[in-house]
Amino acid sequence: MDPNDPAGPILFTSHGLSWCFLDDPPPRLHISTVDRRHVIWLETSGVRTWSPQDPTPPEDALLTLKMWVRRHRHLVERTWITKVMIPSGWLRAEYVEGDGDVLVSMYSDTPNWLGVVVPHEDFMTSIEGNQDISVDPITAELVLGARLPDDEQQRLDLAELLWGC
Image (tube, rainbow, N blue to C red; front, side):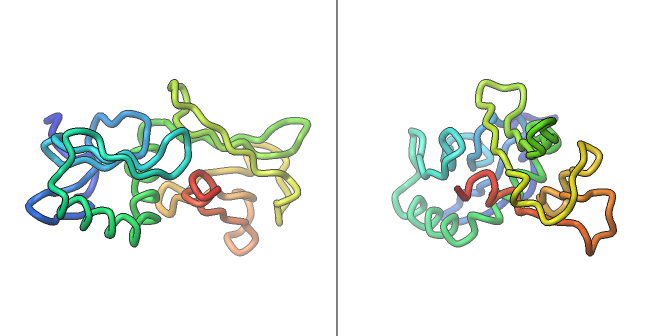
């Protein structure tokens, strides 16, 4: 695979720059030009951020991109989850024995590991173990009650769960 191939769709093109995720991304939400010349970090330790890395793109291109990301951030985050985190094994959800909570881990097995606890008090369905929990790789949702019919499941938006706090 060509190291300059994007790991998913081109997210946005403006001012002659195409922005995407690369096929060997670091475990941290970002967007990059296909030629790897410019990188914008969109999270720091699980917190939403906007942090251009040097060299920065021209100011007009940077401002246009910032407005686009502001409007479409949820799309970028969900695409990152479905196209990068899940295929890389960087997203896990597991039942916490004893507490009954669910632990959602991002960037599993990397130095950037972070965990978010979903307290059992927030569940609207019964969870008895890992068999009742799944991650939907298409919709980027945490599914509680995974063995239940769709209309009895509780679905939580992973982008909001991970970065919306």
